[in-house]
Length: 117
Image (cartoon, rainbow, N blue to C red; front, side):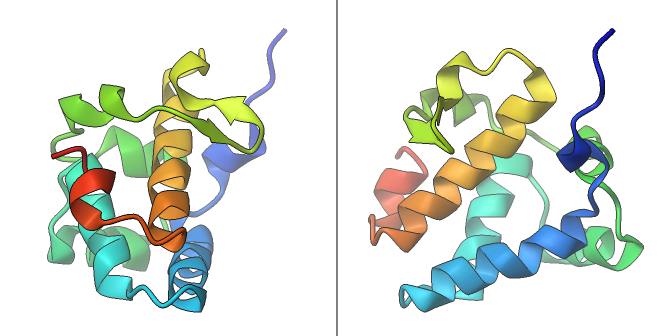
């Protein structure tokens, strides 16, 4: 019997500030974090703000994403010791994709490279 991972039921609004803090500690901005979230999920600024206000969990955040980016398959690499392209659970993979994008932003990678243009 498989148990649901705790991150799935964690409110996105609890983790979002940590994404922003991680980016800002490395000289990046909240606007850049929001741009990455928009690229990955299709949420515009109002949609993202609404999800944060509603305090939806990660499962709902990704389930309701307007247009999950097909180019997300181009995201490769290791985050938390796991290759994102090898994550079996589709929801966990989406969460790891976002983690990887934030990591790349914090490491100073150019936005064009992060969003795989």
